[in-house]
Length: 417
Image 1 (cartoon, rainbow, N blue to C red):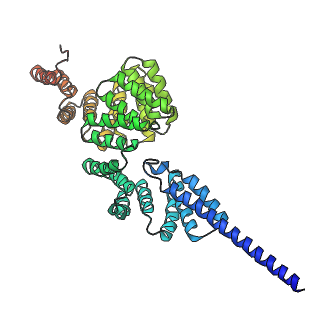
Image 2 (cartoon, one colour):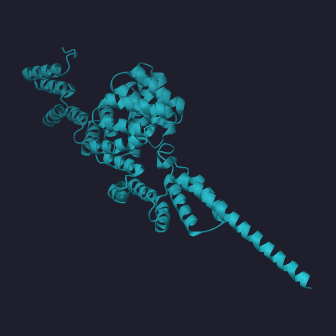
Image 3 (spheres, rainbow, N blue to C red):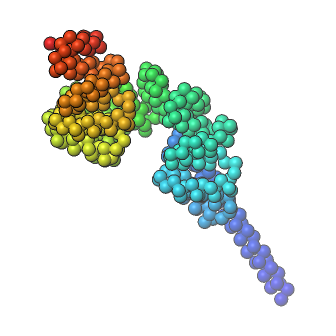
């Protein structure tokens, strides 16, 4: 009997030891999985410069596996963080905000959570709230916080401050292409186009996944009149990602500028297919229709663009021009006035308004609109040419000749009768 008791006691001890070993192994496995997830969530800028590039879904899977092995409060908090980030990436901001609050209560010292909270606020259109969320992380010189703070400063029209913030991040992650693309945009905003091009080229060379630096490079080259080089840049972007609508749009415009209207139209149509909610491809196609004499189609395109973005002053301007060509002066006047209400400094809209008013016989108001346009853009000869035409219609040959001379001073290549 005693022997049996010894045997049973031994078996019980062995069972307890096995159970303890299994629990220990489960805890170790859970800890390893949670540690891996933590590393994913706090990925360095060199691996995931944008919050959208952090593998939140993978972190969620790792943490759910960890909880299956062993559940504890810290792992649950990490899971809340991971799901909040995943929801942010999907644009589900309310859900992300609620889960993030849970994670921050359990992980109060986690600066990455401050950055995520700021990113959520920024995407929700609350830059002041975003800046407030970043204060602690900025005080600790957190690189992703400084990067987001630079974005906020740029959005607020403070490129110098944004550049200072970004330079410190580049110093810590000098091989991160996205940072140079951002710096290129800041250099562009400050008027340093050569520095901007250099940064866009470096960004594209450092990270073969990026298309935006090549698109930005193409855009700058187009503005400089270097259409062939711009087409090459946009084409290089498309080699990296054929689903980039901006690259298709840019290449289409450069092709049209070089005389390849058919190829350009195909590119613009592709941009339209890929970005049906964006007005820019519609505006470009409307311009092409207007150039080809398809006035009604152009008007339809511009109205469709405005249905997508009623606050787009360029679309109102283009609509006004198309309506003027169709002699719908009342409709054109309304379109130009909408453009001016949105952007009072848009010289072309004042010039267009003058043309519509002149077409309707309202010469005094037309003269005022042309004069405003001429003042707003000191390089554009067209408002002065329109003033000359208006004075000629009034029978004032001397005034008409004076305006033509002023226009010629702005553009010596003009061929005037």
